[in-house]
Amino acid sequence: MQKTMEKAFFTDPLQVPEQLAIIDGILDENKDLAGATMVVLNRIQESIGFISPSMQVYIAKKLGEPVSRIHGVVSFYSFFTTTPRGKHTIKFCIGTACYVGGITQIIEKAKQILGIEPGETTEDGLITLELCRCVGACSQAPVIVVDEAVQGRVKPNRFPKTIQDLKSQED
Ligand code: FES
Image 1 (cartoon, rainbow, N blue to C red):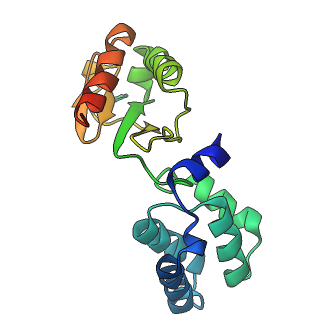
Image 2 (image 1 turned 30 degrees about the vertical axis):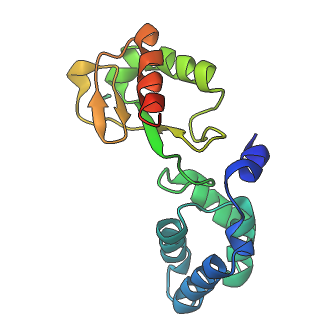
């Protein structure tokens, strides 16, 4: 799935001279620092917007680190993404109250409608699904965050409307 999406809506930054220059600049500037890996990954995520598998291999080589270590860090922290985020992001709170309140049914509904998993972006680059921790609105569980807006007491049968609203903003 990820491969298809890679072709569908973004070019490998290593093949884009301007983006490669940014990546190389960040690597050159920081590679000798203690804790270089985190600094480099953070700055590349911020500047390019994601860290694809091929970028992970490139960074590992430049830093003299095993690819498995870079991959481990990128997969562990949710603010790193391996594909660009979509124009809109829907986050599902998986804190205890939302879990008990039925967030998994909403996640299932989203997967069914969009055909993607949390952590992935639709092929048209419109919507990214993500999981998040408690956003402090437990009394309204289950909670989702659409772009920056918190929505509480979400029901699986009303969720399609949320998607529809995002799509109609594009029309
Ligand atoms: S557990 Fe979801 S908002 Fe607190």
